[in-house]
Length: 639
Image (tube, rainbow, N blue to C red; front, side):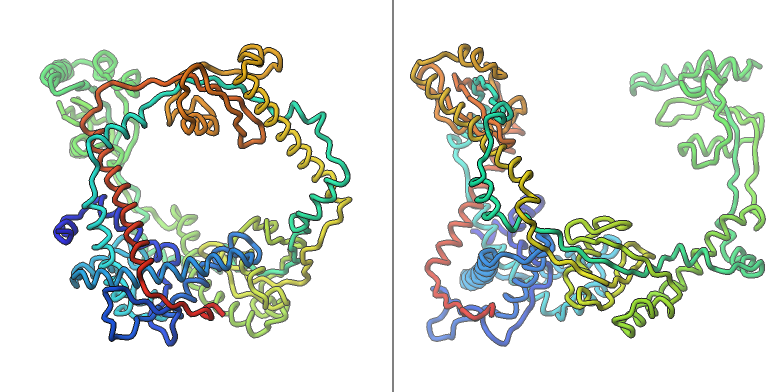
């Protein structure tokens, strides 16, 4: 049954259901590894024959996925990943591979299989394997080879992934939502709640929120890692740009003439025509006959000797040209829509033609003048031709010079000045280049920051490899000095800490005030209007608010719809705001939207709930399989 359901999975439902299966590829890239010489875990389920050795999860795959994940974290954090985060990533990566092995064994036992055609379709749809939107076997082979894998190995992993997806899709598509659940979901989503709220700004408590020396010292000692000087280097660099090479290209008349002859078809001045028209617009199909009749009336007057310009001012509904007597100015054929261009560019000067129908309506067209197209001479096009020639010659040289730059940067690994002499490039300097923000003239360029701070050889004074800033623009970097992060003294950061603590104390005071007011309102010690008047807080409401409306701050709306409905009167609560302020919320009633729901909206809601329920069932199903599986982990896999 589930197999039949799977066979019918197509379109956006399949995309949503299958998407989680490819999470590993999206998360870690295609560089997940295949094959192994040792194991990260041994896994067997109740479906695995007891007499066979337990299948092994490849340690090579797991370590490679872990390393890729850590590289991403390090690039984002710009510092070493904390030990607790490393441990969490290790556990998550290993568990992901264990679950995949469990699902593979279970789906195989249930009889799920994937055809070669399905594997090839998935293989060809990998975005990294496409060139100009089409699958390229050569691109796929090349990319896989850079990762050390063959197409056959990757296809085998695709087969396993698709097989698991069959099981998961079957579970999702076999789930359903009852009419009662659907009605309840609609009621909850369309429910509106009546609320009033007053904002209690933390800023109003700043004056009495002064931290003492002990609090300042304690905060400093607890957050020393936040008070470090930036990781900074001084850099020299060489930059090779195709634009600079182009400016140095020697241009001779003979060379330019030869180049012009090879590309002169690109330097043809297109034929231009100057015409006029009278446009009668067609508002709808029903108006077509009337519009044509009016156009024919104008045409008859033109043919009877009437002045075209005057008739255009009288009849034409083209706001852009009517006042100019229908004059359209000089234009190439491509300026006009098809039927209009066909007519205008087949006419003789002085000829009138029409009515011509386009998507804009009916046109009466008159051709005034013609400028024939012509081949531009080299002299006429010299500026464009020379710029194009310089660029082409520079691009030819750029590849060779980039390779030379890479070779010399490696040959003189510790001496950028020697490289500069050999490749004839000036040495530039950056006095301060930081891990967090880079430095002028490049600004915060991740590729440069990574090339400097994530390579110990470069940090220790060796030349970097050429780093591409843009097509036709590469740099080689060389660190001259490094200033590693140093602890800033308390005196230097004291003012910053005081501002932070004052904000925290003020925020605490604002929330305390909100909490006390909520209690007084609940006990009858004050009223809503009295509290607002006494404290002069900004008040909004009462008003009915929906779950997705923006008329209410997000924090308040979340608290409002999480609160139980009041049995009588209003329900009061203090709500912390994301900016450090506090708010007092009064929840006083509810109402339901009883308007009929369009059939399409109901179908979409049912579809969404089915998928949500099905996804939850897949997760529960997988957890149950994991709990009953026999798993032995290799504790040294990440050592």
